[in-house]
Length: 622
Image (cartoon, rainbow, N blue to C red; front, side, top):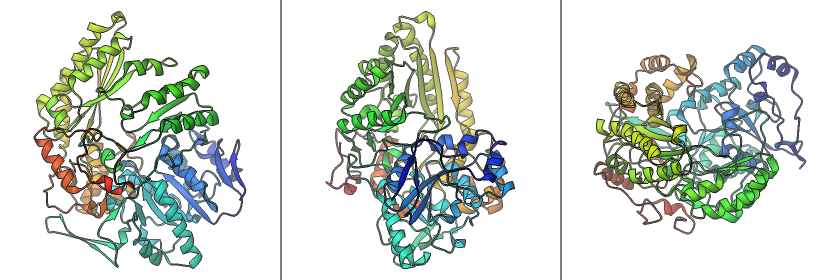
């Protein structure tokens, strides 16, 4: 089949699109034709619209989207194209001109595609999902889309609780897209050839592992609003298990990827070292739902990294994983990459570093080309609370690392914390300021360039209890309590060398509601969207009052979802989805949190979470 990885230009813009682009900001978001994009000219039997419910700059920074783009376009007869949420100025012009939401590669409206797939990594993008469907000219509710085409599917971290979007999505994929999405496409193509109806296709798909069909489950509620029963219909399984990539060395990495024609958030090569995390921080959803740990070999990573830099022309490569410094052969990997990068003045960055295994020697090597500040996430201000969340980092670890860095000439440190963690007290809150001042003192004790000053940035996210974590049963602090804690911490930050920023409590409240919501929350999302909600992750567009009114109109209380402790035997809305980690294990971890007991990381001792049952050889890499 003729396939052209476009080197420049692209499909000729349609006249109606050309007319409106001069009236919008950043028109390069909407033109396509980037270097490395894929165009298939004939023989296409299945078109997939890969949708990211945020702007081009954010979506093109997502490595998962690039991987799926490469995987699907490697299939004969399949053409995967990209779709991003148009900014409000572009949406207004599109609606005026009658231009439906279109894919960048062909310019065709996505309502005529076979499969529309949404990547869901953040709950605050839910209103954009509905807006994109509507802009495509499609009914937003699944029940109103009668035909097999287009089939609306969704994957990503958020679908481990699919219920808030259950009314709008036909199929959820609670697993890793490289494994499950090509299989779905093949099943769809067969159904299309055989003339199956949408209902018949979904029923057959429900018998396969890794596909959650919300229309085949009935949710029944107690009078107090809690779930009493989830009834599978027509032979659907009681629980859907996620599917995973078993061998990361065989998984596709997009060396020849798209080079954006406008600046994006992460404008660099990203290299995924491993999937999963050995640490088990009790608040971290990604650390649990991406288990078991699976690594790529350093030899392959060196080859892939150099290949990606060569093919793209980028001058920076970033090593991406949940905890980069936990990759065992990290030193060998960096040496291999640097031997190619240094002569070409390309830089190597290491995000997701931990204070307990920080290597100053490694940092000196990787920052020969470009020296940046250091970033660490102690998460909590006292050791008691760090033990409760199983952070496994001590104050001594952090100060020792800072002392080493400051003595080596570093003068910028970013520290990330979380407010509202389970068992948190005011002493823990003030401990954040205390730790920041200890880091400041360490600079003046250790730095050879004290006269230049130091910049310490303290940021606090607000705790959001997430499904499939030990804290999934916890209550979130109320908005008033968050504001009190923020004010308490602000009053303790009295140094010009320390700056403090914090997340918005209203945003965190809605995130908690959407993260742990049941199927009834779907009508709130639709009501808020019909009243103008979109781009809720963006401060300039998020309206707490709009969402408050939507909850009131639907007769639901957001506090029921965000600020209420769940009991051990309560049926949770996401119980139909299995991440591979046993619920009993999560509850045990919660109990240990209240005793401030730590659990060793997976490399030291297997604690029997259950994720190894998903792995081909019956054990995790670590």
